[in-house]
Length: 637
Image 1: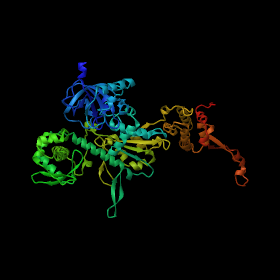
Image 2: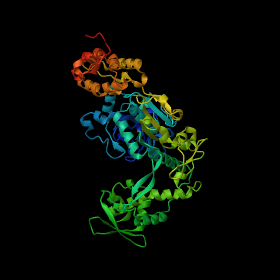
Image 3: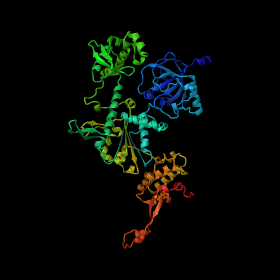
């Protein structure tokens, strides 16, 4: 009992934008964790609740600390999961006791007991105190719900998944082509399997997809008959000047835009891989550059720890600054020598725990808020100064005068390719446009071996801008194609040779709803598609997505009236007899007429018209559930 009482309990929080916790746990790669607070109290043998913040907040693991706090690097197997690999920091090693990557304990499942009244999950910060009761209650919840899960899917983020560069998802209407295009895009960008992504809530996938679109990693476009090369690659578009004059300028299309974005990222990665010596920062040089920055348009104001603005009033020749709060005329002098002491004493503003005490102890009686504000701005400026020093030392690679877009990616290493982000262009309804006219000479450049840096790389001169252009190797193209509009065989042969085609078939197995008023949706859809395939072909089936959200009989009738029946009329060109062969006689009614329905005229073949059977669609609202059941069970009474 004595040993147990000496165990401390902690809450360690992870920011998903910096480290992919869930993926690391799935691969059993989480071995260490950063310690920013309680460094003197966290020790070997303590217990940890590992919590992820953000939209998918929750407990993803329970662990035991396997080392004392010490300066350490992250483990090699952890590196692929960091957005930016941290330098040596205070860390502890972990032994994972409960791996909950597949079914984390989200905040909604946290027990509503008094022990969680002071639970700090979700607050800003990394290391918080937890309690034994909180730790034990999470264990009880895990064991009660049997949600302990060990990795079940092979996952190796260091090896790129074998995604084709050019992919077309094709299938009948409603088979989920656009739905799966989103999953494919995320799989490419995040280097995760489709099976793994399907385990996540759809809302989380759509949220990340939208974020990638906002960041420019994904572009989305829909082809249509009036879409042209000028919209896709580049064209001359009219622009109105401030004076009201019309000028014509070359404007990049969506394909050229994302191609150049992907290439710029590759060049940045290539430059970052050039080894450089550690940069030694000379404070005098840093401060001189900082003063130039304060005089530039890039600087607006300082900001205090509480978010209040602090204005620069004067800059003396000796480097001293005079600042004042935004709503006050009381000014304070920031001495260059004292600011230097502050810079040498603290690596970051986060190291200043108590502004008043820490700064006054070091500098004596000064306005601590003013010094903190200026020091904070200096530390924010410092990375750009360091970057400039690093670029000055990277003299091996020179950018051409035309800029980064003209940089040649010859002999690009696999390391650079694997480290670079992937970019995705989604082309919805790719077969509705004039593909030969829209792609033009791009149809050659998108081939894998014709991409920039590859053995048979090609570049062309664009017709309007007269600049060289080639397609980067980190750009993926995903197209969707509705086979009811146009079959794969009818596509341009050049396009078919350059794309990988993946069929999206109707999948009745996903219709797991309970029977709707006795109607088995799964059996009904299967039988409908079997009959359409006999009468037409498998390009004109009906997809499962039409029925996924059907939960009552009214919704089923609405889907038939507004989606299924119009689609069948289009498929069979108004041949209602074939629609009857698919759905049954109860969906049609015979329209009878006599010679009195026509004008007064002696027509020798009138008997053929009056004897001819003509059908029309019955009002779906009048149908009973039995009519739908008899689609797949003819003898149903």
